[in-house]
Image (cartoon, one colour):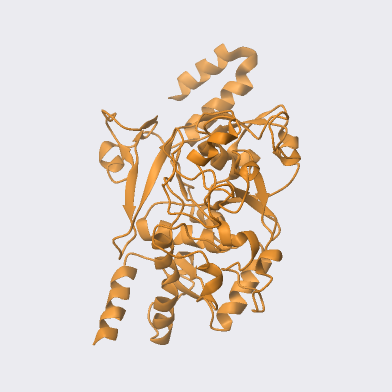
Length: 412
């Protein structure tokens, strides 16, 4: 769109000129349709409309489901496209099981994104855990050190489990959802996946999570209000036998996402503020406007409910507060581990990743989604690493080969 057309549009807009200006500013700020050759390099984006299967038409092409392989492994994770649109965040006052912090409902505009078809599993999370050993080996051999020049590409790997009976109490089979990681560890995981694959991944904002969970529905659950049908879609206290289950065993929602209700609860990025929706009452807002960047350690937003929660906590609009103080009660470390939670609901808490169609433009903007967001988390991580627990290392294209070389030398 050139400036002459821009000026003509404003003249014709008359009294609506401010609104028109906002729309045009949005148009110019968004990436324009990329050449086919560039789109071919982006996983999940194709130039031609698929003849079948799920797809989402966007300004960059057609978003489609895709699989991504974790480098240096044969492990794949699946991502599903979610269309942009508007929806009502929260629940109506009449919804059974509703809590006060779910209202008032507000209209939120959501941009397209991909989201994990399943919750992150142990098969996906353990390679991240194993970075600890590799990073320690590099440090011992003065290899691949973290410097001012490459610090932006450094990831903090979680410390070894001092007592695996906590984290693996309910099992660690490959297809079981990974649990008990702190939100900071979950964010570092998304940084690792991003740097390792060359695509930007992060945790969802709670508005994005609820939008994906609802999949166009306006009811208590993605399938309707009849709680008697919940067992067809979710593992909760009613049918879980007090344990998590391998992902993908129940019915998916209308957008092909599994275990959005139950199995394990899922981290979101937001701080949980009880009256967060109130300030937007009667307005239409974007996800960015509704999002609440955390300013304290807890409570933060958890969504979806788990095998250890009842049906009310599994509703699409239900918000569960984190509680790091209670959830690290039996952790004997000082400071408490910034990577692992040991108690209570943390043992049924996991995550799901998303990839927005439009990634942040700068490295600093991306880092906000990945790094420690308050001083106490940064301090705890630094102190623990100074004690030899936890490790930092650079994630770049050369990392898989460097790890293989270490492993080969060990086998000699």
